[in-house]
Amino acid sequence: MVMANSFSFELVSPERLLLSEQVTEVVIPATEGEMTVMANHAPTMTTVKPGVVTVKTADGKTERFAVFGGFADILPTGCTLLAESAVHVDELDRTALDKRIEAVRAELDGAGDEKKTRAEQFIAELTKLGEVVIPA
Amino acid sequence: MPSLKDLKNRIASVKATQKITKAMKMVAAAKLRRAQEAAEAARPYSQRMAAVLANIAQAVGADDGAPALMTGTGKDDTHLLVVCTAERGLCGGFNSQIARHARDHVRKLIAAGKTVKIICVGKKGFDILRREYASLIIDRVDLREVKKIGFQNADQIGHKVIALFEKGEFDVCTLFYSEFKSVIAQIPTAQQLIPASAGPVAVEASDASAVYEYEPDAGAILSDLIPRNISVQIFRALLENVAGEMGAKMSAMDNATRNAGDMINKLTLNYNRQRQAQITKELIEIISGAEAL
Image 1 (cartoon, rainbow over the protein chains, first blue to last red):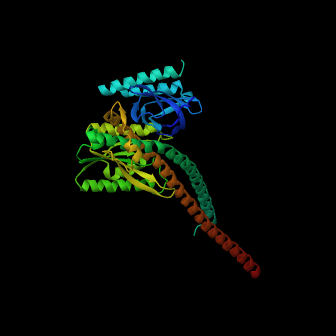
Image 2: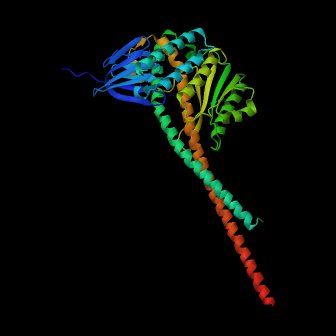
Image 3: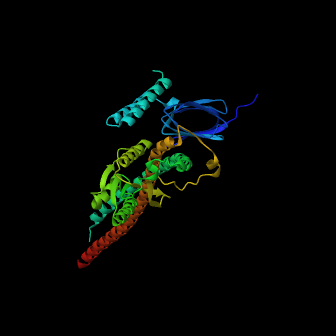
């Protein structure tokens, strides 16, 4: 049996480094659809939409993080996810999420059309995220 | 000549002040540690961001699709200065140093015939710059209510700057803050935000050689990345400022405590001397009274 190859994965938010570990598999909610990154992935750079990042560490544990947009830099030897903001799923709570949605809504008034569609999309993604992560 | 009672009161009041400055120094030291930790925690993000940006700029630079935020408007007639200072005083020359640095810059620009606009972040910088350039200040950001500076605060400022840029309000944007070198040294620094300078980060050879796939495409990523990078730069500046402010406050309060100590020594000496003189005087009075009998 061949052991799955591991690679280094880093999840960074502006405030701190959340995770830096050897992992075998990372699922990233990229803007063009979810993608699973494994070792020796072709060099890719992609933007990330709000969603859940699932990380399988080399010692077999699975960790989940909620990220709110950002982008990922993928190299064959490692992957860096620069998140605008990220929290561990266990620490996420509904009120914080609602507050965020509220903030985006407030910004909607007076925004341009293009911005509006983007913001609306963002809200939809956040709401979906809330449903996935926290059972109502 | 102050009376004994006056001196006593004076000593008591200086002692009380010394207690306050000592406490402020200790508070600043604790806050400094936290601020340094925050600045350190934020470093990986800005470093990686700079590396990625340099990388992607290289790719995009070739096909000329770089967004205006990166290339600028092609003019440099109107300058926007974002001056970040502290919200509170009592930290030595910290705020005035930044303000002076910005003021020199403004003078130079005005002498060169450019238009200058200023955004003040922090109350102290606003107070200083208002005296001379009240008409140039277009906005001020108050962070006094903010206990711990988060990325959101920086992001708000970043959005403000970008919105102004999109309206064509300025051509070049420069950020003023104080770089935290050590507890005793903070260096007022100016950093150009727009057009985004490639930065001092050299791309490592291995990264540069990798041929990236871009999703959606390089241009789209870049136009998403640059506004974010501006916010990150502002965030970094704010964090450095907080650390610098606390460092400056610590050494200022340390000085104040020491000065108060010197003053107490001097006053105590004076007090004792006068007390001695009074005792001597009373003795002489008693003795000469006894002799007269």
